[in-house]
Image (cartoon, rainbow, N blue to C red; front, side):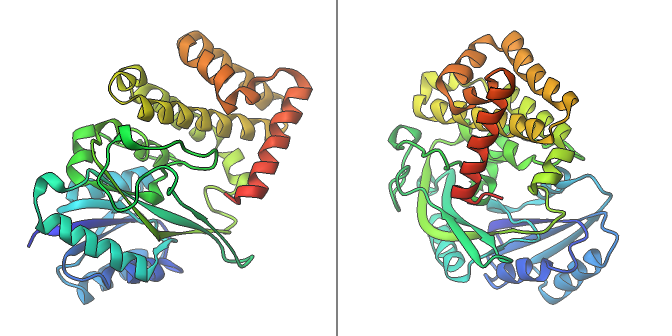
Length: 343
């Protein structure tokens, strides 16, 4: 049976919360496959995955592998995926029931209809869930994409400062991902940024659904996006930023899709902001010097990109020299964090 969508659930020591995630997927029935990738967990994650496989034959695949990190789990899932579409759902997140039903109805229509009418990318809203605080923030794209209409990059509007196409909002066609040649680095956090960036130039058609599909949990102290954790893993953040800078020729993209190229420049700008701000937040002389160094290297290796980021994007505020510049950068970051509640 041809599966309409493959859901990949990378897991590491997820025994305490993975049920909420997997339950939100298996209920969608036989047209989906749920590939649970146990990435060398040291708890009962693997056993729970195998129980799901036993209880949902033909829907769930349990894969046990040596630890390789989040990217390794996604790579494994992509190699095994048999669905026409592909979505990653992290084990501490879940899909909204009503929104997931609407997505499946749409995907079923695409998969059962004319192949030429299948979008390369489906975009949906996602929700930041600060469950410990009882707060939510929905990220929508109504100002960017026409609703429920097949479109191209030529048809998109302008992204707001808080809007990015993150992994949570994306449902790719599986063959687009494979065509892009994406292979995420192992033992590296924040690789979801590469997943949300590198394949975009291969996307020719997009379909936006104004549904709050992906429920993104925030609040665990050990979570990769926790501010203290991000500072401790700044080397990995910088590594991912450098990969993003080098994996797409944005100048070539601009010749075909200028609006997509403008977005890609903004995404690089955001990555430079994230790397810069966490170096500055640490307050250590070593990291303050490293902050200067990443901008120096960008200027030396990619002078055109440096000029664009420094003088036409928000990331330019990250390269203001001296203590005043650091104060401006950190102050702006704290205001944005309060407004957009991204951590």
